[in-house]
Length: 126
Image 1 (cartoon, rainbow, N blue to C red):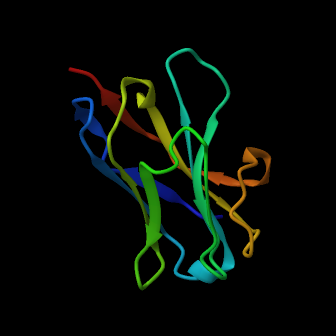
Image 2 (tube, rainbow, N blue to C red; image 1 turned 180 degrees about the horizontal axis):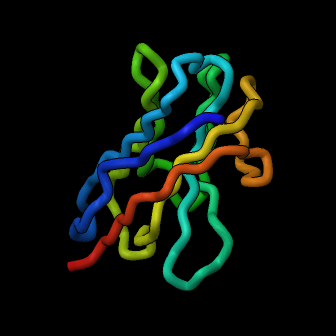
Image 3 (cartoon, rainbow, N blue to C red; image 1 turned 30 degrees about the vertical axis):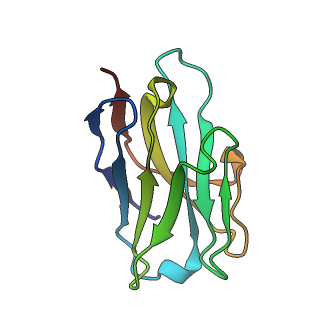
């Protein structure tokens, strides 16, 4: 099973930026795609943020983050980054990285993701 570790969270002022990283323990990176989800303090279901397919590099974003967030992976394809710009207080949440065996699709459906990291806290506040 893929083990995922997120890093890069923290406290940032509105309008600021953060870059989250998701590192996987499996080197067979091409066997799964990765996505980012978040869960706010209200306890609602985890909300899709962004995803990238391992085959083809297709990307998908939630409407709420389009134009502000980007997702990318490094050349070795065992780290995926979520670059978050122009952060807003409503972006405050625990951000989770997750993997899916669907290799050609940047899926927004949390039910398709089979492994999850522990999460990293992002707080946007002045």
